[in-house]
Image (cartoon, rainbow over all chains, first blue to last red; front, top):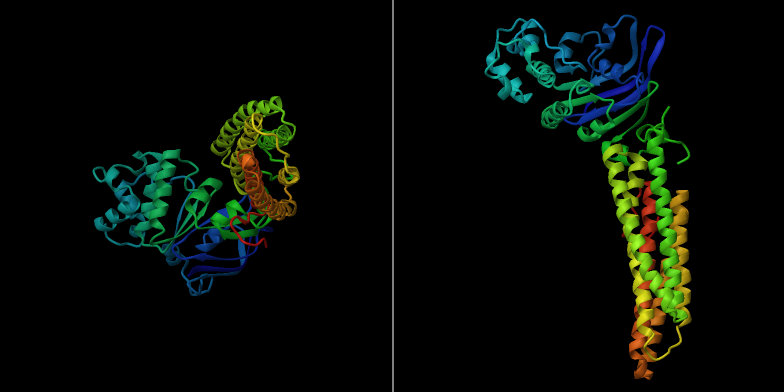
Length: 248
Length: 225
């Protein structure tokens, strides 16, 4: 079943077009990887899925993005509420430096003025496979954790607001191989309950974690297919050139 | 593979693998030719040369296995490169087996030396030419990434099988007529069987080439699309 349906989505930063009429589904409870060279529009694409693109100066878009058949760009849709349903994890772990581990996890809920809820925090930290490592130091600063732990803390923070979709923008690019393996293991676990879209520069990571892969080039969706198909027998010669390193 | 890889060292590693495979295939082809010629000419010296050559082919197999593993571990190839390296691993095994079969034929030359002299049936020569051609075509198809050429090999295997069955029946008839020749004729039957097996290995090579080019696995299919 499709969680998202993207139709003829084009996006601009001022007069520079970064996405050109992208149409593709995002399947529910599947991991979809977006790959492509720098500047191909991968990050812009996922930022359009939770209306973060419009927060950039000079940004605009055309086309439609449906989340469970509802156009997320319809006037009645509240972008803040949308971002609770469609959370995002960024390239660099970004815990709030002045907040404890516990308050970092609950920061999304605190913004909506809910009381400090330990049960939600524990549940989110368990889902992010971090609970056992931090349960005895919840009041310590979030930034006291290692880089990999900080990234899982950010994932816990995203999970605490109970999203349906998690967007990940190169979530492991700042992590060592062991921390990367932990995050990838977590992605495998999370996909049982969440729809995940991951932007990655690592084709091996896309091959390891995703069910579907989309290859973007110069703002165009060149190929979208099963990950196993795309990395062994891609249909399009430009995909073949990119994944075999004959590109550019 | 017209476009070059951005990483030139990687490009060279793949080229090295390709050229080593071609060299190994050439050596194996020469082994078949020499083994059958040794049988036809009762040339023990040539037979012994084939047996010695097998060590070199075995060494090629070990070295190419290692090279493929290094490429897989260091480069983590994808797409056409992944198919190329994985089929190279399999092709090396088929080529090495063909080498072993050539050695078996050479060994029969040595055994037949001390037996009653028999005429080597012309079908053996025909089968040899046929499998040599199959091997050449498979390797050309591999080097040119030509799936159509590879498919032509599959058709030739039926001809080799037919030649084998005809020869088998003829040998049985001859054995029934002349009991003194049963033992040497059994050896000739074995040689024919090994040539037929070489044809099967060439078929494997050709099927692998089709997979490398098209990403389509045609093995064990009754008909070619």
